[in-house]
Every structure is written in structure tokens, then in C-alpha cells.
Length: 373
Image (tube, rainbow, N blue to C red; front, top):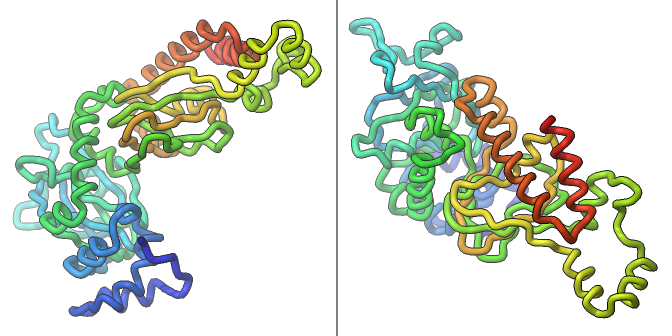
């Protein structure tokens, strides 16, 4: 069991302990709540493993504009951002000069303006407190860094050795292998070079889900697109709730209580069972490489129109909408076309199948006509 979060643990307490050469179990247990609350990759890791990672890792304060890792170099450690932000830059490996070249005898360690940073390639993402970076090199045979990372402000990092990461964060290590295999065959990102796709993983959040777990819920705010890396999901719609989310024409409104009673009297218990089934309609099954939240993103909807439930053990990746928009604005790579064609296909298929749930069919057809003229 994880320790309950404590408001009494401050960053000052954490920093003081990290600076100590020796750290007792009691001292580590006192700051564990802070790490569980602020470090994303520790969320589902056992307490003992987290304590060992902290004990065997090095605390490193870094100055603003410092080049922390460089694309093309061999890496043997990764970094967890405790406080601060960094920018990630990458050049295409197919370019003959994809590695940033320094002047003879001079190695750039500080970059203070955009021009100096631009020689490291395009800005891929911005990472903030709680994120990690540098671990992707562990999965390459040559351990080569995929990108250059530069401090945007004064940083506080935890430097984790490759062997410590692989042993103590084994589940994260295995999940990342699945994510890398997914990125190799993902149709969503096929327009990008493989190394660039791998770099995008830095800004995605991986989640393990058990059978029956909700991935997203109908009516919740859409904050990300979810990509299935492993497993299978069922998509369910509550037509009554859907009618509250989307305005319907008068002749398509849900049945009133009196109308439902009349239906039951007229058609018997078969009608009652049909009405009950309408409360939750399974509309689709999704598998590896398929998306959840793409319809809402393309149509500009702020709420999920479906509930997605894990039908097996699953591994999914969440990409925040602002990160996806940022990616498409900088380098689309065919993402827009893929999303629009996929969404049109989904809506057409579901509308054709909705022969019994009138209000659902009406909503889908109305949305399809409005957005795909």
C-alpha cells in the first residue's frame, strides 16, 4: 500500500534529503508522498522500489540553458524532472548532418537564444515537473540518444542509472517495449521518421488497465486522445445521456414515461427489454492501434460521447490534445487526413448500424452532415 499523501512534506524537505549521502528508510518514507504526488512514472510503482530508486540515484541541480543530453550520444542514464521545464529538440536521422556540429575544439554546453538552439533541430516538445526523459536510449542496441534536451529554467533532476531503471522499474521498462513496437506500426504516425516517432513518446502517458476498467466515461471532458497499444476495448453509449449532450429535433426526442408504458402494453415484455437495452448500447469493439477521443477531437466536442471499457488487460497511451495540436501545427505528417478519414468511417459505420436507437442515429447523422460537407 502506498503512503497517504501528506501536505506537510515540502520541496525544501525533499531537496534536503536528496542532498544527503545516506538516506534512512524512515527519512525516505517521510518524503515518499511527495514523489507519488509529483512524479508520474512512480504512480503505480511499489513503495520499496521507489525508495531504492531514490537511494541509488543522483540528485542534480542544473542551470538554465544547459544542454543536458545530446542527440546521437550514447546514454546510460535517464532523468526525472523534480522541478522545472525542458525543451526537446530533434533532427531527422536521414539528414546527413542530423547531429549538431560544434566548432573544432569547442563543445556547446550553454545555449542562450533561439538561433543557438535551432542547430539542434526542431522543437518536439516541452517537458515539465514530474516528466522523465532519456530512457528511450535503453531500448536501442547502440544506446543512442534520440533527441537533445535543454533546460528552459533552473532545474532539479533525479539521475537514474540504466541498470537501476531496468531492475526497479521493470514494469515501466516492459510497457515501453510494447509502446515502441506500437510506434513502429502505428498508422497515425506513419508520416514521421521512426526516431521522431520515438521522441513523441516522451509526451505520452502510459496506463495499464484491468478487465472492466473505464478508459473514458461518457460526458467527461475530453483532454486527450487515447491510443490502444495492447488489449481490446468495448465502446458503449447511453442514448438518454446522448440526447442531453446533443440537441435533437422534436420528432426524435426520447420516449416519455407514458409513451414507454404504452409501448410495453402494446408490445409486451419484449418492448420492456428493448427499452432496458437502450440504456447502454455497445456500438463497437476497438483493438491495437485504434483511437478513443478522435471523434470528439475532429468534431470539436468538449465531452466524450461514449464510455470505453477494457474488455481485456490493456496498455493505452494518452496524448494531450494541446500536444497533438502542437504536433500537427509544426509537422502534420498526414495526421489530419488520417484522423478525418477514420472519424468519417466510424460515424458512417455506426449510423448505418443504429436501426433501433433512433435518437442515437439522428445525432450521428446530424453531426456527420454538419462536419463533413
